[in-house]
Length: 124
Length: 490
Image: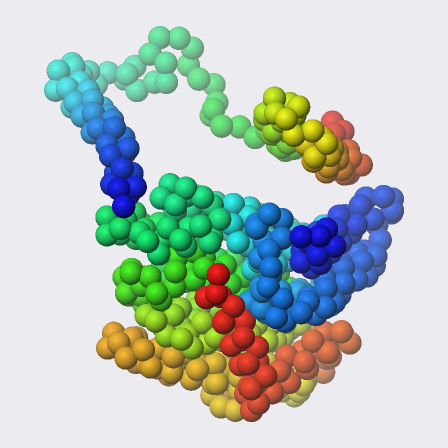
């Protein structure tokens, strides 16, 4: 009964943080708009006010290969996320935990083997 | 529960998952490309999965994987439907899959997607449901972009971006449920909802809105429908047929499950709020779908809008479920069963025409009756069924669902049915115009053509099914009824 009420109470700090956040951000934005001096010189419109002029657009094409590596990296990154808690509670669970992880790593290994065989690890 | 029992329960999904792995590794290990293997292996895996489904006892009721998966008549009904559709798609895909570079990947992805859909229909836990939904979606994103044309890539990207947002929204809804009930297991959530205090109304309503948003995306309901025409048009037509039938059916299956088993269905103290919400969405889907379809000249795009409108029809049944109709759930199940047969036939016919004549424009269907009479007959039959004219399955399904809605006795549901009937009249315009083009207009070319053997079988079965369920719907209705009954029993 009180569970749902408690739920609202738990979210009260979130609401407060949201309100304070809005007030802070908008007061800063409006304050700087009101107080700061503005100049319309040509240099103000450049990317860096002091420094080199940019030579080309910042967004360029880059190889799809990086994307493949990123994906493969994420696979093993996530694996690490699972292995750490597993290693901590391993002693308590025993055999079952061991085989679960063997299966998990086996499936990941199959995936890596597939990617390898497909030539995804080759830098061409 | 014994290991054998568990394996038996997750057998269909497991067969499909393992099949996907075998297809992919056979491709990568066979050195030279062997697309033939892909088809055979995929067909074997799907056939095996189907045997597992058929081997299940219709009265079986149990849980596997520590309660994450639930097997009952409901999940068997949908597993049968989904695996059957997958089998048909695999059989029709050969020619197209041979023509692309990643034929084996296509079969692999199709099997993964199908396996996750089966799990989705069996899901009994919010986490299982979400993971299955994501697995099936990601496989579909890739399949939509497989054709290496600009349109296909666009379809894949659009599907991916909008699908990710929908998944996030859905997860947010699940988080609300978990926050309130303290568990991701549907029966536990149901216990909480049954005894929820009045102050739980707002968070439950929020959760419901988010969940319907997420599932509505899969079911192609307005206002979450904008991706449908673009993706159906851009994706390869065989992928489109899979999306429009299997994906939608799985979406409705899981929505029914979560709503009925998790949120208490029509017995809940909030049932009326939910019913009104779903009714509005149903009305919007029918209106957007049908008016959108009116002016389409591309066959796949038209089927996309029509699919939105049909989802609206199913949602009428959904609203009736929420309003306490006892025959509502079986109406939804029956509609989905007939819709699968009908839309699969229509989409495969469009696929054949796109492949043989290289066109998707409805104007180019002129005189199809003279060039390929059987194809034109099946397509016409399916379109007539989609309109809802007797003696086809679509008519019975619509009558069933609208009857369920009217019988609840709520005025606003009667209004909704009135909207649906007006929309049926609108839909007759574009469906029957297409039929007229096929039979009345003169063809530009007279050359005759015939689809491949397996495709012919699928098309004939679908045309036969449309007629069969139109004149003798009894068995399917009974199956839908007994499937729906297991939904409400915890």
